[in-house]
Amino acid sequence: MIHRRTFLLALAALSLGPAAASDYAPVRPGRRLVFPTDHGGHPAFRNEWWYATGWLDRPDGSPLGFQATFFRVRTGLAEDNPSAFAPRQLILAHAALADPGRGRLLHDQRAARAGFGRAGYTEGETRVWIGDWQLERLDGTYHARVASREFAYALTMAPAGPPLLHGAAGFSAKAADPRYASHYYSVPQLRVSGRVRIGSEDQPVTGRAWLDHEWSSELLPPGARGWDWVGLNFADGGALMAFRLRRGDATALWSGATWRAPDGSDRVLPAAAVLFTPLRQWRSPRTGIAYPVVWELRVDSRRFLLQPLFDDQELDSRPSTGALYWEGAVRVLEDNREVGRGYLEMTGYGDALRVG
Image 1 (cartoon, helix red, strand yellow):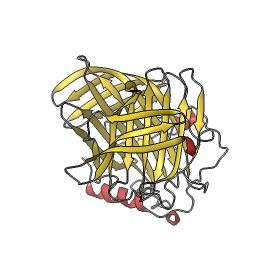
Image 2: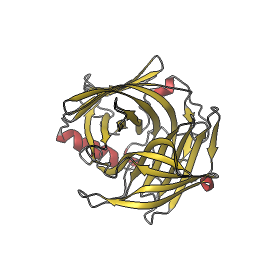
Image 3: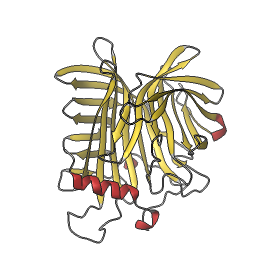
């Protein structure tokens, strides 16, 4: 249950202008990410999220997609107030399951101020929670637990390799102006095991997942309406993160990609090497928003086709973050052959996204 007052605090925090708190920590080029310390929270920065997505297989081989996202927001409000009730840091969370048998996204969301043991995060290691929803890293392995009325899952996610650093050693530019950047890394090819409940049916699952961790104080540069992003795990052991920030006319404002080859070598690709081309739209019957759900993605010399597990993977987070977006499981095809699976995120296709 999310309280209306917490909703209002969250929306206010996410819509604050840059002058609301002049001492937000800046993202600096040249800062070296240090692990495990940087797996934890960074409360001096304005925005931060830990984001796990993946494909799961049930005992009969049928697939599911899952999402678990935890946000930490420094509000810039009441920072001089010593009261434990002061809403200095907020924790928000989105959770979802994509079940083709249902044909729609099952999702839930929560928001709370950090404190009193009800919600919070730790510095120095991944642990972020709201009530009994939690994402944590123990002895190098991630654990996600979510329970809602329609669904629940408890998943263990074991890395197959080191973090994948984006941009310049984790400094991920979002514009030519270096203020618009984030510290950003991923952990691809996570080996997943656990259990999923949908309704009253509880089943074991296995699969592959992707984890993102990103923090910043300014996110979207002027002129950006939203973004298109993919995190893809390939069957050969490789991985790809690619994104573009999008103008209101749907042209690319800024793009980037990071490629991990099957041998574990990493390569950062320039904007000119990344091209997103929409091929088919789906219109939400609930919101009327049209999302491009089938894409051609060109990265360097390779051309991929992205196809959704099913079309209706729209997530309505207006009660918590104020955003409507599409977050869904996709198959990756190359030369008419499935070569990978992952997740596609699309924001700003309704109202322009306003974060940072």
